[in-house]
Image 1: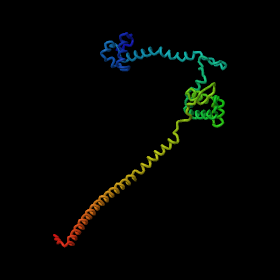
Image 2 (image 1 turned 90 degrees about the vertical axis):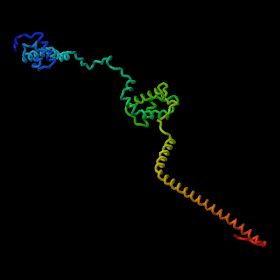
Image 3 (image 1 turned 180 degrees about the vertical axis):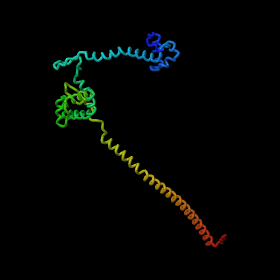
Image 4 (image 1 turned 60 degrees about the vertical axis):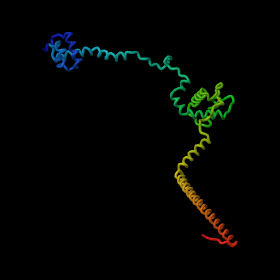
Length: 275
């Protein structure tokens, strides 16, 4: 064993690679004891397997290392673009930026979301105050707004975008770069009318007052029930008294009738026998 001068055969290399695939690198004793690989590696030792595996690893990784060393050179060899300040940018790579694309930028959309209501209010205020039957142009609208409100930089572009948006939504009517309010457009936001507010306040106050006086109402109802029961009792007692008085009256009337008859008999000289 351990004859390092003996050349490795293809069968031995295949057995070594199969053993490494099964047991892993470094498990040379396990590979030599494995009955699947031992017959092919009878003339090899642990050191032979280790050295052969190192040689195979180095030979297999050598081309890759050369490629890696060449990779940075290939990147550096590539021609760099001329740094000429006078050179114009490539038209094919420069995006065609228009006013519409600027207005549709996400930042502008976010701005619209924050200030849309404010801009709409100023636009409708200006158009309703100017009241030009032919419509008002952007300059007239901006002049009106700048006199009454504090506007941000580049307000003309922002206002122009809002006007086009309102026209596309059908809230404004555009006639030859002039804008006016449509007749069927409702100005302002949907806010409850004063009557609706009063009704809601009354309903809320009524609910609160009713909630606060539930206990008082229950006590009052109990008093009323007790009072009604008392009155019913008094009425029944009064009826009984009336019946008793009526019976006494009937008895008295009968007694008077009897006395009258006795008196008449005595006046005629008749003898009256009282039982």
